[in-house]
Each structure stands twice: as structure tokens, then as C-alpha cells.
Length: 346
Image (cartoon, rainbow, N blue to C red; front, side, top):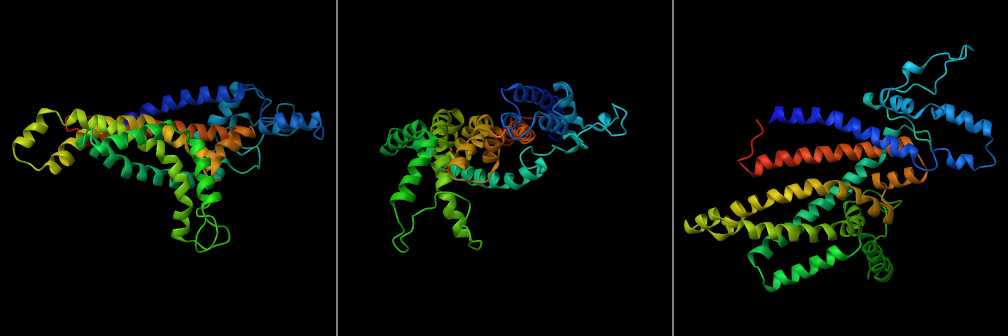
């Protein structure tokens, strides 16, 4: 298994390189540019705009900009015009040495911008995924065990509704109901906060953090609970009719043990595949949640960078997203070996 993991990680290097080339080209050939706002401003002279282009290295050809972004600009630090001044726009080590450059908006290091946000997104999405698993797995298992019962029909109906509801619209309805309409009977304040990670001006409190998580997590989990519960139900129905389930039942094992030890473990195998494919979408879904609930995470950072044409931050977020996809697929392969003894990578 260790050799397989190392081999997969080595294979990811050229894949990430190709992805970075495509993303860099798409970002830079998009209409406008990082200095589009400055070019429309009458207060910034053309000379100042040209100086800004040289400062950020935007006067170089696109392939040169990519190489500088990737490996740094130490090789460019030469005196081209012979005036004794090194013609470069600041020392860059490149992303292969952990230097993602500086934000165009506030001149802060890109890694510092991401470091301030990434924990918030991981925190939100981790809680959401845990809640999705806690809710979806029991619903899917019980729906399969009690096929065509009232519980199964109700769960199926609610699942179809959950998949049909637009996520952003659901978030607006949640804010309307729990912030605008309903009040706390003891304080007269809104029942649930409409945004943020915590109450401003108050000390850290676990209950306050949980209170601020309820609406964002609810918005993010509804569609995925509906999807995974239906998928697990279908997978459980396929597994429960297999020969080894009938053999275990013929040996006199309890139904609870049969379903939990044998059926569920095998039914989770295709679910792992779906989760690995869906994980990037779950992570990307934080964009809508963070925008609507003013959550200071990676999704909000990506939106701000895209609207401000902050290319260094935008590229860093996209590359991190590509890395997450690769790691998610690797984790899925490792989970296969745990769930299915027939799978071996050695």
C-alpha cells in the first residue's frame, strides 16, 4: 500500500503541472485583466499603469509570466538597459518553493490570505460532512430494510424535494424564517443569526459557534443528504439479495449483525466512489454558503479574488482545489482496500 501511495503521488505531479498550465492560460486570456479597473480610472495616468505592469511582471509574455509564477524570477534579475538597476519586479521563488506571490488588492502574501481563510472553510465543511453522514446513512439503511414502508415512502418524497430545492434559494428561505420571522421568546432577538462565525464583541463560546453553524450547515447538507440517502438505499437493496447475505441468515445470525457487518460495509463501496467524485462539488458548494452567510472562508476569498481580478490569489485557490480532487481520489482508492478485502494494491 505504501508503494502504491507514493506512486500515485508521483503521478500527480505532471497532472498538476498540466492543470496549472491550462488554468493559468484560461485565467489570463479572460476578458479584462488584473489592471482593468485602473485602466478605466482617469486618476491613474498611462505612465503609472505601465509602471504597475512592470511591477507585477505583466509586461512580460504570457509563457514567461507562467514560468516566473512556477519557478520564480531569480533567472530574470539582470540589468537589461545598463542603467545599473536590476530589471525585475521583486524576488519570487515560485510556487514549487512555496511562494504564491502577493495579492494585487492589498499586497499581502497569497499564502497569508489563504491561511486566514482555509481553516474556516475546513471547519464549516467538516461539520457539514459529519452531519450528512450521520443523517444520510441511517435514512438510506432503514429505507432499504423497510422497503415500501411508510418510512421509505416519506424518506423518498423528502429526498426528491431536497434534491429539487436550489441551494441558494434554500439559504434565503432559512434566513427569512429563522432570522426575520421567528424570535427568541426570552430575549426578543432573532431565533438564529443570519451570518458570521460568531457574535461580534463577545467572548469565545461553544454554544455561540454552534448557533452560527446551524443555518449554514443546514443549507449545505440538505441536497447531499437527499442524494446520498437515495444512493445508499439503492446500494443496500442490491447487496441484501446477494448469496452471502442469505448464507449469513441461514446460519442464524441476527438481522442487525447481517445488515451492519455484512450488507452496509459492501454497500458503502460504490458510495465511496460517488463521494470521491462529489467531494470537489461539496467543497465548491461552500462558495454559496459563505457568500450568503458572510462566512470568511475560501469560497468567499475565491469570489472576492475573481471579482477583483486578483490573479495570484485566484490561481492559488484553483491549484489547491485541483490538489484536493487528486487527494480525494487517492483516499477513495485507500478506502476501497479497507472496505473490500479483494482489493489489493501491493
